[in-house]
Image (cartoon, rainbow, N blue to C red; front, side, top):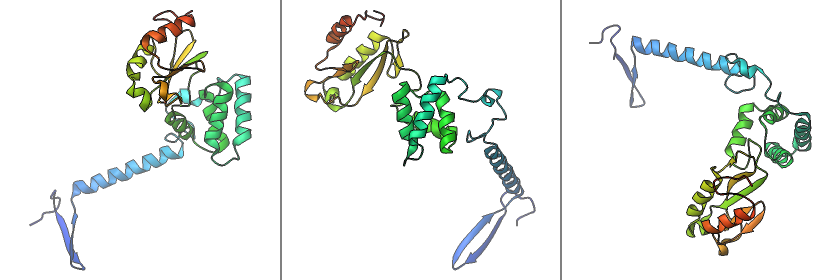
Length: 231
Ligand code: FES
């Protein structure tokens, strides 16, 4: 027989031949009230923008600074021009991001707030799109790009070994830039040179059948010493 406050008391009934059971206990009631409080708290945080990034963060004084405060005037002008060009186009966010990167060679943090405000999006939404596509750079690239193909044909021709050698030679990983700001290393997925795999591109110049030794020769020609990108 169930007693008041029992932890596993059960109310049950029958409707259209289906027996249903409703768990009931005092601890269940407390848990339900707790969930209601959590719901109310999440709703309140969302209202002040703490969860979405739209509003002012109440917990961190750092976020009270505008994200675009560090933008130089020429950068800000390029970004606002890109926004003005595409804000009324269909799917404007990606077009604006492409235009910003084309003009500045990367998407500065300061651009996020400007774009979000112009498109009535949260900063978190814009951050999410920039972070989703490896194409968009968050830091300025090096003066020269080294792109190593990672697609099927090049993989069949041991591009992994070449890639490891390139990383070791430059002292950086993919999506990184050498300390002197000279080279940025990027993966690329087919350079249209499959018959001469493995392939890579150095500052826009295509090279096929590249071995680690040949890469060293190419870099020596560019004035890069082993283990350093300095000329
Ligand atoms: S797969 Fe590497 S160039 Fe096509």
